[in-house]
Length: 115
Image (cartoon, rainbow, N blue to C red; front, side, top):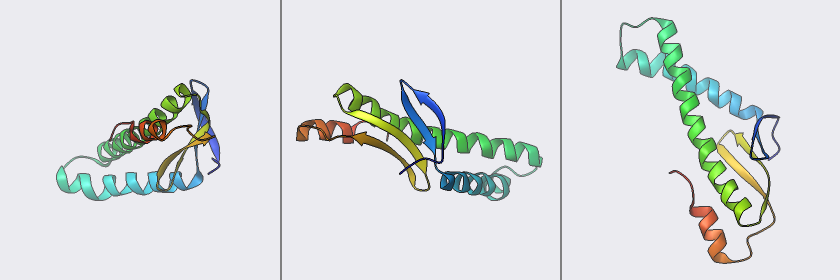
């Protein structure tokens, strides 16, 4: 999946965001700010809820990025070039250029990462 725009590079690996991710991020922040946090922590002002929602969304999507980055960094260590990482509607994907030579290598790459 091609990214709409690149937001950063980590160890030479471009990390991009697809436009669909922006919609999910907005819905996530909105639902935290308007529904979940006011019910869980009543009486705070709107700016506090918004700050909490944005911080939570950034932490959540940061964990998705760390997960994909762990796949990418191990792939690079195994000699498989990484075209990039894309965050999109359903999470993220590390785009590998090539395939692992052995099933054990593929299993390590698939199994690595925070869960």
